[in-house]
Image 1 (cartoon, rainbow, N blue to C red):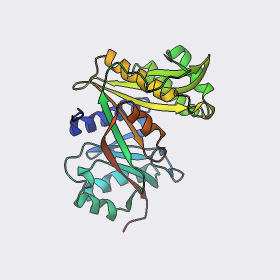
Image 2 (cartoon, one colour):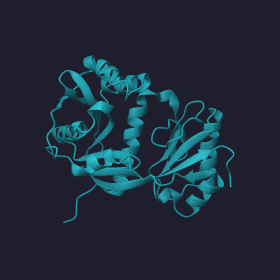
Image 3 (cartoon, rainbow, N blue to C red):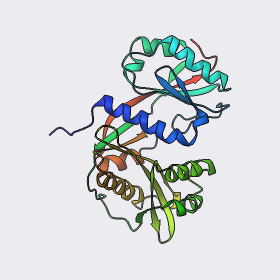
Image 4 (cartoon, rainbow, N blue to C red):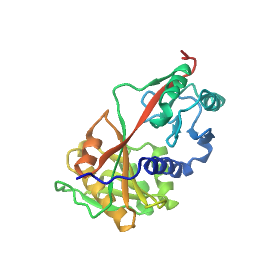
Amino acid sequence: MAIELPHAGELAAHCDRAARITNRVRPDAVVEVPRGWARVRAGGEGDEFASTAFNRVHWFTLDTPITGDELNEAIGVLRSRGVRRAFFWVNAPGCAGSGAEALARNGAVRVPRVSYVVLARRSSVCVPPRGSTLAVRGVPIADLAGVLSAMGERFSAKSAQAACNLVELGISEAFAAFDGDVAAAFAALIPDRAGDGFGHLGWAGTITSQRGRGGQSALIAACVSRAAELGLRWCVSETNSAIPTSLNNLMNLGFVPALEWHVFRWDDGART
């Protein structure tokens, strides 16, 4: 029996909205570009890995290939902010045919060997495939800063502040898995009520010493159940294959790969 998934266009539009929603806490860093948007801050030469790089241009909802003119305008935005390295995230139609040629002409090279995957499933009451001695509960804004500070290994001060801002503004809900009173793992749910409704799972992190205890699986199950409680039809998460733990956790809880972003690294001056 075929697994029900959102329409690809609806799913791509949701991922675009979810990213824009979370970027509301850093409006000065977001710039519109033709048919997409850029998240930028000065510099970028130290951004080595696409999954953690700040400087990005997102084209998630293209229905025709990206053009040279559109790329030139986006690159102009990067240069105006002093960015000399960024990553271009493009959906499949955007980098097909002439789109791939335009990217190559502008020095954008596909990130090798790593898949950047969007996974989805129906929301429902969800139980993790194995039990955990960690206790999952929602984290109110009054406690969130302390929880993330205690997990400083996983969250920089800036990331922790952004997560707190998102919860304070009502954009996301926070969950943690606790060993007693100590937070071992964290995740957030971002509700998107457009269309049939989506719950976007993200901000996942687990303390190194607490890995292997089922914390993230329990958090994923809690978020899926909460999405159903909120009346959201779909649950969605984005991850990559570089470190497959998150990918496996999601798939073990019924998530199915539904889209794949094509990710390119751009270095200024690397034109072909």
